[in-house]
Length: 297
Length: 159
View 1 (cartoon, rainbow over the protein chains, first blue to last red):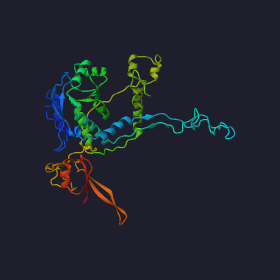
View 2: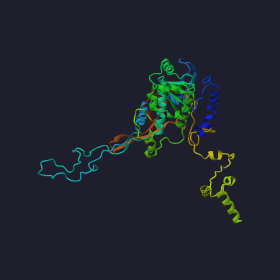
View 3: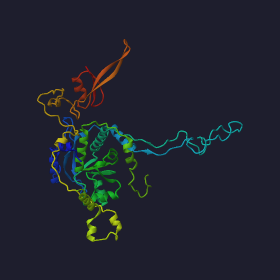
View 4: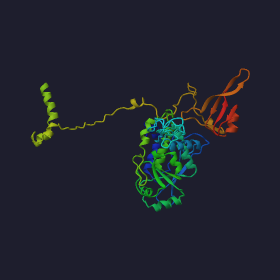
C-alpha cells in the first residue's frame, strides 16, 4: 500500500514508466527507468541487472534495468549485516524453564538431624542443593526473553547491505515474471538452475503472496527452491540462499518501500516494548504442521 | 398522537408481516410470536464528493519533500542548495536525506593542562559521506584535519 505522499511524489516520475511496462511486457526494460532521488554523486556508478526469462533452461536476456544505488550500491557494512542477522536469530527466543531453589522445593523446612554428635554432615534442610531431589543454587530462573528491537535505520541499512552484497557477488538475478509459468517439472527446474549456475539454493521473490503455475509445483518437491513475497524479505534469508531471483514487480516494490523509509520524515529510532510483540512472538508457530516434528506450544 | 405512535412502534416490532401472510395462529407456534423477529435493514449508500485537500494538508508529512525554489540563496536560515561546482572537485560530499550537509559537532577531551590541572576540551567537526579522493584533495583543501576516521569520514578541528 503506497502512502498518499509517496504516491504523489512518485506518480509524476515512476508511474509513467510503470504503466508503459505493464502494457508492453516485451519492452520491459528498454524504457529507461527513472530512479527516484538518485544521488548526484559523480563517483557512484549506477548498478545494473539483466532481466531474464524463466520459460527456457537457457538464460534468455530480455533487457537491462537500472538499480537504485542507495539500495544496491551502499557501502558493504558487514558489521550492520551481522547485527541484523544475530537480531533475527535471537529476538524471538523465549526461555520457559525455571529451576526451583531450595525454598521453592516441596518440604525441607525441618532440620533432618541435629547439628552435633551424629557424625553426619551439618545440614539444614533436605532440599539443599547438595541433596538428591534438592533445589538448584544458581539455576535458570523463570520465563526470560532475549527480545530487543534494532532501530529502524539499522534494519533498513541491513537490507540494503544484503542486497548490495548479493548484487555485487553476482547472486542477484531479475526475472520478468514468476507467475503462471508453463513448465512445472522438477527436472526442468533442476536443469535451469544448473545451467544458470544458481548454486546450492535459490530464493524467488515476488510481489504477491500467491504463486500459480510451474513454480508452485516445483517448489513443492524441491526443498532448496523457495518462493517468498516482498514483505517477507529479510537479511537472514538473503544471506542463507545462494541465489536470489527477483521478479520485475518485486524489484519495483522493494525499491519504492526502502526508499520511502530512507527518506522518511520522522525519526528512525522508535522505542519498542516486549509487551506489544509478546503475543505475536509466542503464537508464531501456531498454524504450522510438520509430519515429523511435534507441535510447538 | 401518542397512541398512534405507540401503535406504529408495536406493529413494527412485535408483529412480522410474514406471520400474517402465512396466517399462522399464535397458539400453533407460540415461540415464534414470543420472540420478536429481527429484521435487518441495510442503509442505502450514497457517495458524497468531498474535497479532502483541506484534511490532507493537516496530516503529518511522511516523506521528506524537495526543498521549494527560493529567489535568492542563502535562505534566511542560512541554507544553500547543492551547486554544480560541488561536482567539479576530485571529492564529493553527499547531502543527508533532509538536504543538510553531513556535519556533526563533537566536544572531545584533549590533554591535561598542567597549569590549571584541568582537561582542555577541543571541538571537532566530523564530515561524513565523502566520496572520491579523501586524503590528497579533501584534506589538502580543508587544513587542520584532526584524523581520518574511515574511508568516508574525517574529523576537523573547528576554528
